[in-house]
Length: 88
Image 1: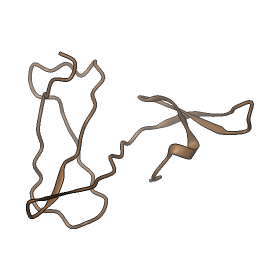
Image 2: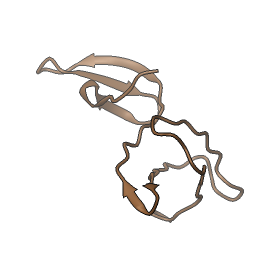
Image 3: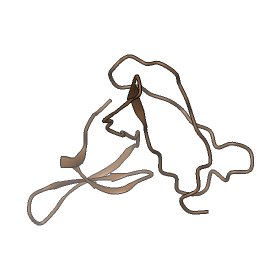
């Protein structure tokens, strides 16, 4: 159901910085649906801020009538280039 937690990944202690992970839906969860994810981080018992990043493939680039650049992403649809946080 929408909003349901389908999996939890606990990587343990990580150094500060950007970290990658791969996820495979568990048995009984269809790969043919949209998923969102959330990152929780702590230092000791104190919650710290995070920036969620997602890997996707650019299929096309287009200009808007105002001169802005949009990316057409394989899995996420259209995104303004100005919202890209990291490349590579």
